[in-house]
Amino acid sequence: MIRTQIQLTEEQLTTLRGLARQEERSVADLVRQSVAEYLVRRPRVDRAERVRRARSLIGRYRSDYPDLAEHHDRHLFDH
Image 1 (cartoon, rainbow, N blue to C red):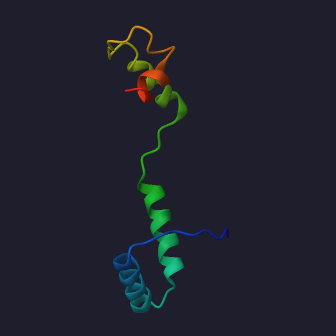
Image 2 (cartoon, rainbow, N blue to C red):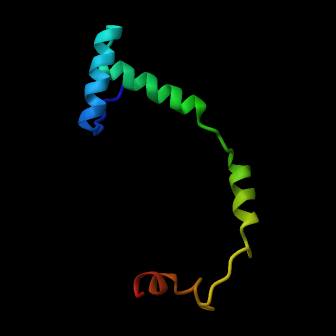
Image 3 (cartoon, rainbow, N blue to C red):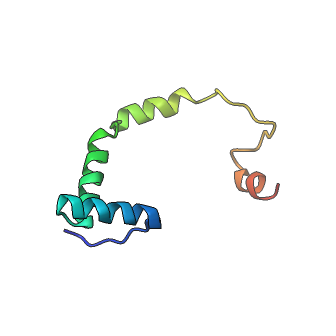
């Protein structure tokens, strides 16, 4: 396993500690289980689908800046 750090609110940690005591498990174990469950539920989109979605956006939006593609930083940060 790889050690990592996370930040929780005081309420989240208090709740997790209570659950850990009730279930006689560690907080780390509960966090690992929660992450595993989240990753299983999370919809997976393969690369081909991401490309298809991105391509479907081409030409759908307009800008008042004809040079937006070339000078996007100037338009984003100067205004």
